Image (cartoon, rainbow, N blue to C red; front, side):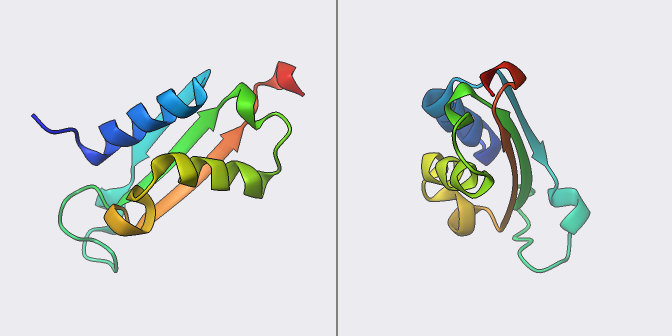
Length: 92
């Protein structure tokens, strides 16, 4: 059985960052019938990720890092992606 988009995002992010917290929230149902809804039920997501690797990165750099790890998923297979990336409190 093939991975869902959410499962693939989780795998890619775990492999890239070994996060201490990772939530992938499927927001697609909220956007049913709107622009970008392709009917797959996997068009809009929120990612909440916390990882040591984000400690010295700005908010924009963190988003670029996440998008880089996700490869072709944002913009190609997922219409909208909200990213909330942070470092653990103890990482500074």
